[in-house]
Image (cartoon, rainbow, N blue to C red; front, side, top):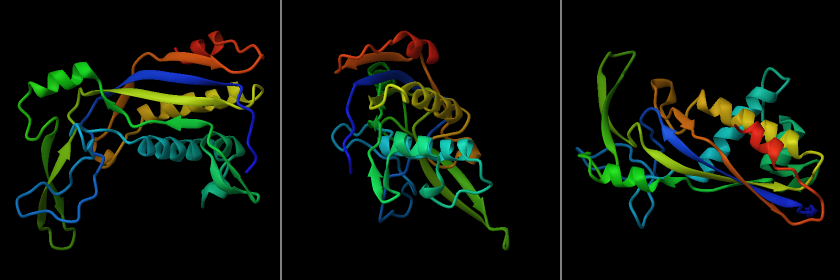
Length: 227
């Protein structure tokens, strides 16, 4: 894999607020009778719910693949547009791998949201239990289950870094990123989105530029784009 010149880095920061309860599942091999069937992923040290960076990256890439394709169906990463491959990276592209220009981070609770939730009467620390039924279409029998959710109103610290590897391609990359974030707010994060889970909205973006080259990089057009 060839290594590209790094002109600089753009750091994006914003609040990410849950409009509806969110469930991003943690793997579980065993569930005792009467226990919660599907639990959320948490930080092992603080026990606070988190949104994994891998979940955000995968969802943004999935949505942008569907939005930008000129095909009726996408059978795999090889069908993606080259703009997506350079933005998100790919293991093999014409015999050569591409490094992702985006760096995702696990998204953690904002301090003010954490403090507020600690004072609230939840079923579990920071989360609520949602009781749901699935209906067998053949027998008509109900199958009740308990799903753990991060409640609506919780706010997280969203962070994302874009590596500037091409000054000519930078603005087009960022336009694509902006589209992905806009579509995400019309979609959902995590599971059970068709039932209303995982609706999110972003607050105002703060953008920080670190320039490692002698080339001039104007931050103002980027800030205007993400207003």
